[in-house]
Length: 243
Image (cartoon, rainbow, N blue to C red; front, side):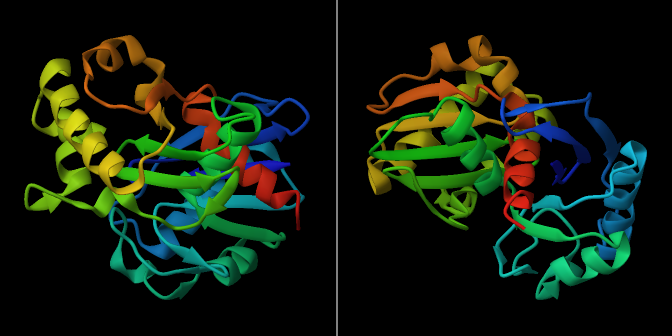
């Protein structure tokens, strides 16, 4: 199967071995066009798929709420995505069967199946830290879709404006300063949902030693995503396999 992960800064994809839950070829990534209009991003998705000569079903993740193939929000891409039949547009452009789903939900499903959440019951929250903060909420292994916990208000701001990787980079924060912000965000989410486990994903999951030891006072277990930044691609391919 094949998965494509649309992010605020990059569009990446690869064929996936669903027996192993791993990429079966090195991923191909391009920069997300700016502005990230539907037409330009969909052209980018086409470029990624064309790179591999893929001709089967495709799963595509999107950084926002997705309901029945329609994109409802667009926090880190162009507002033209709001209310768009993304599945229809992608299907027309690619000429392939397509499924579209929230990016963090895809990553979470992959982690619950093949990674850090495998076999875990109770309440598990996957947080993808990147341009924004994506979230996936699971109760006894069942996904509650489109939670968008990155937009919880924290000290008068969207949480992702304070605690995302982009915020750390834009403000040139030290790991310690950023970990302090992230801890405040995790404490807020924990107060609301009392999870048993936080899984931290996104590219920063490759560097857990830089920040996880600096986070204290959270009751839930906190672990890095095992599939790291490939989780969204794997989850997208899992969704494509159901077409």
